Image (cartoon, rainbow, N blue to C red; front, top):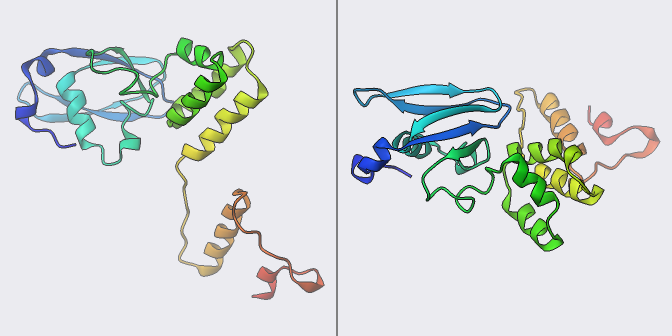
Length: 197
């Protein structure tokens, strides 16, 4: 989403939003100095509140390459004071602790809808943390959150120049994936990987 100066209203330049960092990791935002030049600021520390103009938020969001990494919509930042157009529909991962506790108590239908909607690892991790304080959380619902977290967590893959190391790394990575094909063991008690060397 590229934004130009013509798409920014005077209200966007003047409205000061308040957000709360709820992620355990750090994110960067863009601030505009008095000359209109961009300055980067790192936001870190859980429960830290910060303010920026709507223009600065829109500018920051326009620079995010992958929408899944947008801290304003992926649940890393929770809105505290924002324009009316920033709602739970536009930011379904930005839930307060109280809203998460209400979700745990929701009907089965609503629970299923929330599990399809929430796609932020930060929000799902908070749900796991808050499950201890929620009344009546079933093991099934906690398992649903953990499964959803596995679905949306970005996969990391290490690559090596050494083919043997790469093959071992790929084999190790597949062991954690229940859908990955299992390597068959050969005769004589030695694995096929051992015989190949």
